[in-house]
Every structure is written in structure tokens, then in C-alpha cells.
Length: 174
Image 1: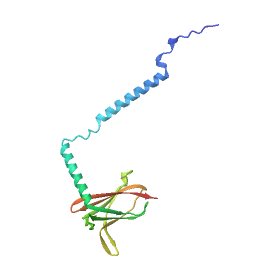
Image 2 (image 1 turned 90 degrees about the horizontal axis):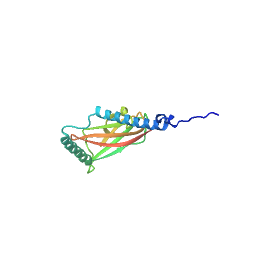
Image 3 (image 1 turned 45 degrees about the vertical axis):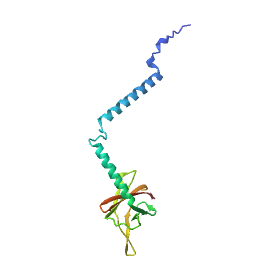
Image 4 (image 1 turned 30 degrees about the vertical axis):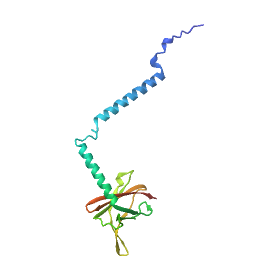
């Protein structure tokens, strides 16, 4: 009978699959971290501007003015079911806080597709005419949507040189 001489030192530590797996994970994490640090330092310089304080005050004043202007007017969207690739009339009524119809200088209706900005478009709105009589404060536009799903529409109204905006989410059906 021959004896087999098993030497316990013949299994080197670098041949262990468990150790090699952990070593690979540590090195991959370090490489990923180094890559992210390099990317962060070599690209976009950040939001640092020289006049940040003045810009912040100007931004706050503009937002406050827009909020005050939006509260002066009441808006009501008149939207029926909208179907894909079919012309749809969207009407919007504007009145002041006392209920008097507004007479804006210009009204534009913007359609935004949250999932695909390439489909965004806008149309000018015209005064709504019913039975040969213009209905003051109500404007309409014909729109055809080329994609089904969720859309956001925004009515931009210029009244006495001041722009006010009102938004509504809609869903386009098949």
C-alpha cells in the first residue's frame, strides 16, 4: 500500500474562490468610487454664481408677483373627453375675483408631454363665439394630440402686460 502525503500548505490562500470573490467585490467598489469622483470633478461646475444673493432676492420677488397675479383671476377649463389623433376644442374662462370676464391681450395654450418633450406644442387661443356672439372672457383652441396618456396643458394669459399661467392635467384616450 502506498501512502499519500497530504501537505496542508499546498492549498494557497489565493486559490480560495470565496476570498477571490470578496477581493473582486472590494476592488470593483473602489474602482466605481474612483470613477464617480473623477466624473464629479471633471464635468458640471455646479450651481455657483457670483451674485447668488441678488439673484435669489430677484427670484423670490418674481415668484411672489406671479402668485399675487394668479390669485387675482379665476380660471375654469372646459374639457371633454379627448381621443388620440382627433381634433378637440379646449375652452378656458377667465374672470376677476368679482366675476367680471377678463379681457386679456393674448392667450396661448401650451401642451406638454411629461414623458416626451419632443411632442410638446402650443396654439394661440381665440375668443369663443357662440350663436354669432363673442362670449367675453372665454377663449378656445383646437388641439390634436399625437400620443395617448397623460399631458399637461398650460394657459398663458397676458393681461395688462402681466403674464399669468394656469395648468391642468389631462388624459388622452385611444
